[in-house]
Amino acid sequence: MRKLYHAPPAPLPYIAELQRPYEEAQRAINAADTSHLDNKRIEQRADEIKRETEKALLVRVGYWNGWNKEMWLPKSKIEFLYGGRRFFLIPVWLAKEKGIPFTINTPMID
Image 1 (cartoon, rainbow, N blue to C red):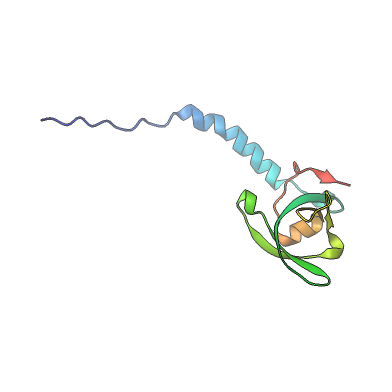
Image 2: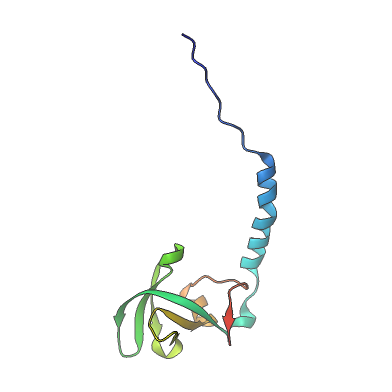
């Protein structure tokens, strides 16, 4: 008995061509200078507050979007929103220092 082998379909070249402009635009957005935003604040989600001292909080952030980090944040520099301790505002300069990713498309406050 003869076996028939079917090769997987070759990738369609036009899909890569359609994806290229989007990737180029994303690289430009990610590489854009954000130094003019240092006095602004961004909203961030605290997945968990692990520890608390008099002056700082050990917060886990980024779990929901895949980069998951724990970091100490000074209480004097963050402001909790919506009457809870889940969402907070953090200055852009501190977000940069702590490695919290954002782009020029991230909504800014103040």
